[in-house]
Length: 122
Image (cartoon, rainbow, N blue to C red; front, side, top):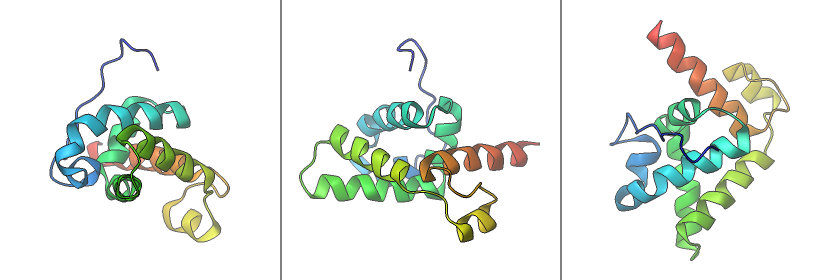
């Protein structure tokens, strides 16, 4: 990611990733935005839509699990990112959300959340 790129602010402070991270949200937000954008190759606005969604809340739960085991915030975010990139979209998830089967889970849901947000704005 280009270091001069402005990280979009959350639009969901009380829920999603930001709300789930509680007092660590401010520090976690730019780390997660960058890690996910770098891993998926998706733009920051798409990552923001993902992190602000219910899927972002589940991602935060995964990060919280890493923190609980003693990982640093950055390590917990990177581990969650790699874990979600290692999973692939299965048949039932593909049918339910319209995400192509076999796509990395994180990439699929980042793109899915961007499409949902765009359709709601239209």
